[in-house]
Image (tube, rainbow, N blue to C red; front, side, top):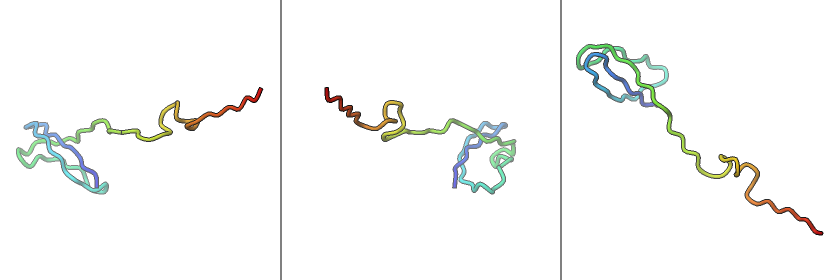
Length: 68
């Protein structure tokens, strides 16, 4: 289940909560009763291994046999 970050517009408190995709988003801060909003941030992606870079796309070795 994914973890979502919320911020209260009233007291500016931030917290994380684990929710299912089918759960309704939280709307009320339990600390002050203010309005909550989901905080969206960039997703961290780490490309590891071969095949992700332009110079990796054609294979590791290029053996051209020019028997002149």
